Figure 1 (tube, rainbow, N blue to C red):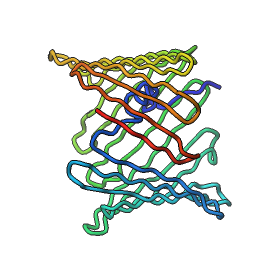
Figure 2 (cartoon, rainbow, N blue to C red; figure 1 turned 45 degrees about the horizontal axis):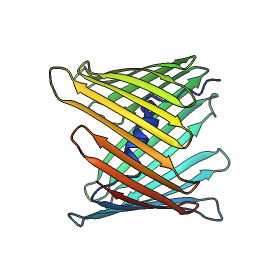
Figure 3 (cartoon, rainbow, N blue to C red; figure 1 turned 60 degrees about the vertical axis):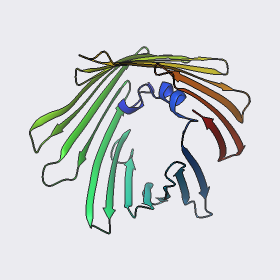
Length: 261
């Protein structure tokens, strides 16, 4: 069976080289632990050095052993509560269903999303619907893979306005150490990303432009893995902004990242 990615994961390897290991003007910490009862806790927090504003969140996750249901609760410092329940390969093989709800106790505002995805051989399709009685928005995507070539389509339909609000296409090629992706969003935004891995060096090139505009965005990034715990990263874009990063894994699950931009 082909390892068909979701639409959102197309070009993810190139994006990670550009985005992971950087965070100018921000200090961030992530912590993951697991209790004796198999409950996993994910805690993260970040603070902005220029404004001093800090925020964090806590996500405990457990599984209902009888049905194998992953159950995740989310809470952050903005007093927003979230709950996610998913069901995978129970009703049908490779079929995943999930329900994600959000509640803001201060305003009693509620929102939710129902998501479904199905994978079969070299084909993957998914859809999610906002739980909004005034007029939900329907999102859908599909990805096809053939001998390394990928074709994807993503759309969203606003039922309240009876209008197609998103219309995206992508075409790409993926190999073990090389990836090429192109995309067209709403017929106006165009982009190309290239990812190459040579030994312990990962390199990425991004290029994007908008139809009817001379504004072209481009950048190049590289990540070098010194050893199993240490890596260096650097990037530069067409606006002459340079980023440097250093990541050190102190122990499994604990990482220290230093950066400069």
